[in-house]
Image 1 (cartoon, rainbow, N blue to C red):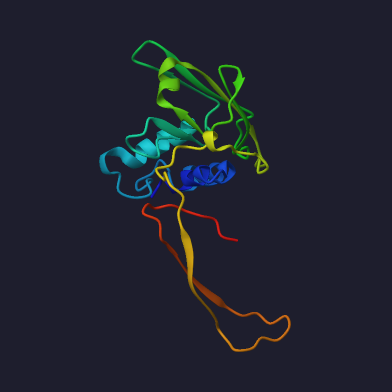
Image 2: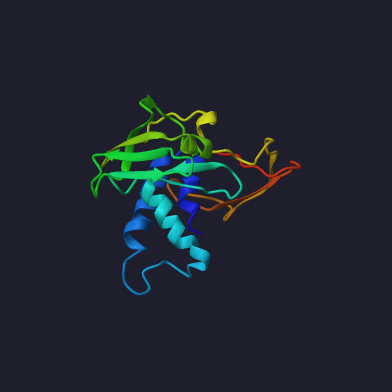
Length: 193
C-alpha cells in the first residue's frame, strides 16, 4: 500500500517517510505505458503522486489531516474554492535534497509532522528548507505526531521463550524465540528492548 512510507511519521521518524516517499516518486512512476505502480482504481495512485509531490498526503481517510513528507517541486500554489491560496515552497529543491531541514508555516517554525485541512483552507505559505542529509536528531513531541487511533496503553505480557540449544560457547551465535501477547481490551503498540 502506498500510504506505508507515511507511517514512519507516526513513529516520529519523518526522515524515513521523506526517503521512501521520494524513492517511490522517482522509481515507481513514469510517463510511459504502465508507468503506474499498479491498477489506478478511481485515481488513487495518481492522487498519491499528486499529493506526495506537493509534500503531504491524507493517510487516514476521514481524518482532516495530511502527513508531511517533502515537496518534489520548488513551488506549488493551491487555488482554493474560498478564493484563498495555499502555497507550498521548497528552498534548495534539487534531486538529491529529499530531506526537510526545517518547515515554516506563515513565517513561523512548524514542528508538527502533519498539517490540518483547516490550515490549508485558511490559506497560507508553507516553506520546506531542503537538504541532502536527514535530520534524525529531531525531537518529536506527542502533539507533533499525526493522530493515532490507539487510546489506551497496551498490556504486553511475555508468554514464552525458547533457546535453540542447551549450551552455547563464548562468541557463538544462537537463536532465541519469544512470544508476547497484548492482554489489553484495545489494540496498541509498545516498544520492547
